[in-house]
Length: 106
Image (cartoon, rainbow, N blue to C red; front, side, top):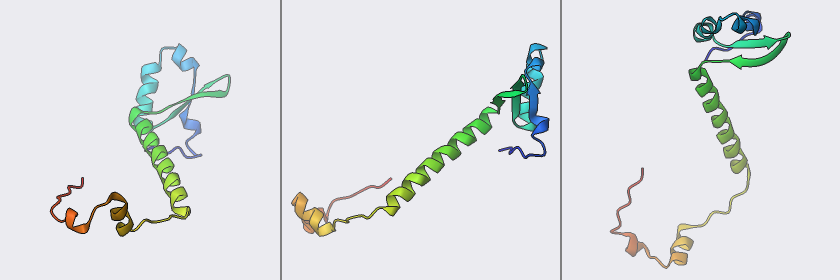
């Protein structure tokens, strides 16, 4: 993913008037080759243009961060483990009952 640094952030600014002049295709090509573009209207940022690939990468990173936060939350909570013996008793199953059972894990 192309990361915009403070040094090249000025190069990524695109006035909305360029769209009005019919330069949309040129701007989209700039996004493909040079990374993000920040569209400004009246000197105020209105939107950010990024390629679909970079957008997908951002979404995946966001989802990964959410999963990591959830995993950390769960790991920080105390857990009451149930022994295998207790599970077998609760289900009224013996070790002998499970001896000939094939389990396939994916």
